[in-house]
Length: 152
Image (cartoon, rainbow, N blue to C red; front, top):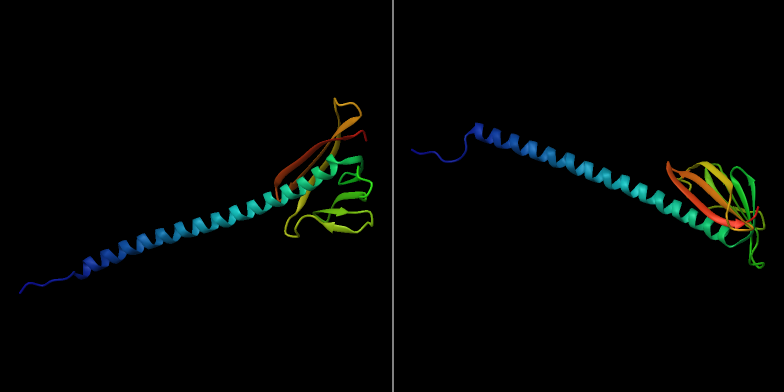
């Protein structure tokens, strides 16, 4: 009488191979998902940094005057007299903006930390102008804004 089917040893070998393949698939899936999370976090930092840099660039490029108040603060007097003076400052690890009434509002999300802020004025070849450079780290990503402003 001829028997059909698999022997117990064949079943154990197949189950072992199946287990190895499934564990490889699980490790690969976990690595892929954690990579996606890291990329999303980095993208959020880049978007936040580009927003703040764009805001600073817009304010500085349309300024009638700029005053560096401290190592982490700059005051901007706009060309348009209908707009109020704005102050941009790093406080408690975040970029803040204050309008003429002195009320600060946070520009960066609370989950982001701003550090190593450098605000410097550099000589420019343009008469009556200076180059204002603001550099900072946002979650260890470097950002910089460089704009010609009226002579400080």
